[in-house]
Image 1 (spheres, one colour):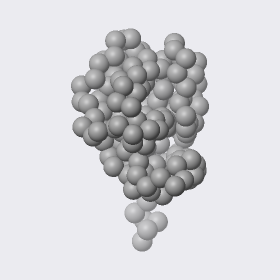
Image 2: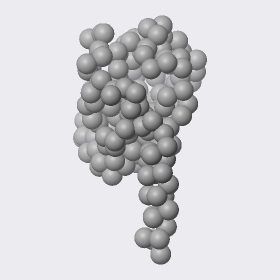
Image 3: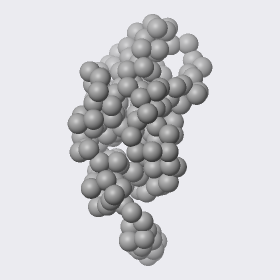
Amino acid sequence: MAEEAKTPAKNNQKEFMEKEPVGKILFTEKQIRERARELGRQITEDLKGEDELIVICTLKGAVMWMTDLVKEIGMDTKLEFVIAGSYGSGTTSSGVVTIKLDVESNLYKKNVLVIEDIVDTGNTLSFLMGKLKERNPKWLKVCTMLDKPSRRTTGFKADYVGFEVEDLFVVGYGLDYDQKYRGLPYVSYLQSEE
């Protein structure tokens, strides 16, 4: 019965990939969840003796990665969300960072983990981390699902990295192109970017 349930979904994914301009699968759902497990254990170990962690998820792209990761962190987590970005409907950063939704929690002397979908130029996270540091957290780190160092224009480095990617416009598993492809259960890329 379970096998029958899986078959239509696989067929739908194959049909989708044939119709849409996405390339091969870079990282499967299984690989992503396994990496979330590894990083969740590492974060738990790094915060040994602490009892709470405020997780700040960057919307909208990091939601799927955040849900996988939070399940693997062995301590109480308080969820917050922020919208900060430098992308419009194009495939390159505009360079102008804006914060549209800010964190509500008091971060003073708290353990804070920012969860990001991808670090590209580093402009958005450099800006966001600067703003969060002004609130004097006790511990402030970034965990990104994907890191694209070839596009970095700042000295920003994430503390925890799921996977490194080449200079492709990646989509799927929460990442989008003009609000499309977020629901793909894997990470791929736009074929026009090959």
